[in-house]
Image 1 (spheres, rainbow, N blue to C red):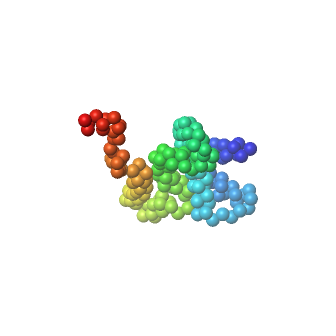
Image 2 (image 1 turned 90 degrees about the horizontal axis):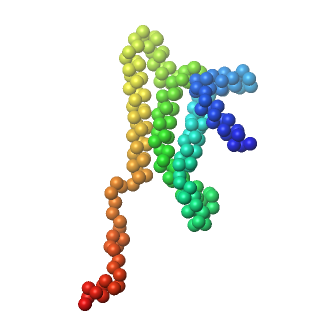
Image 3 (image 1 turned 30 degrees about the horizontal axis):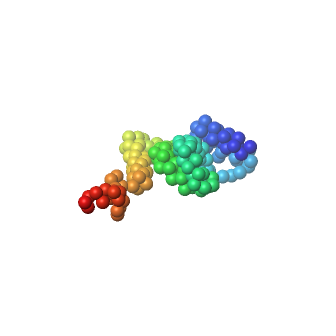
Length: 193
């Protein structure tokens, strides 16, 4: 039952545009249930549930990408399912899904522009208002373009930095006496003769 509900949620929110979802949630909740939602609260809810549907598929794909041998090895060591997921699987999944997560952040930044359909004053809405009042279109939209670029570029660079931190140093040396190869006793005796 829970799997069916989650599948329906994922399919519905991935299969419909965020602009339509915004209209249905904001205006539909007022019409159908008499709820008067704050437009900024509605915007947060809309972006959150939309992103949740996409991110759940990203995480599911990340878990599926882990080799079954990892699960079997963890169970062979005596780990239960929770320990296997937290100690073995999820660290690998997090590394694998970072690029897709970065893409989702970038898409979210750009998709907030559709929230102007419920009168949320975000960057596109403000730019459109300025251009409409001044009848000058190129400079405001060029500045908005630059602002969107700065936001998405910053998020992308932060996530790349995080990826490098997770990967560790490119070239590392084994510490201590792990670099030395142990010689068998017979070779030591032959050398001493």
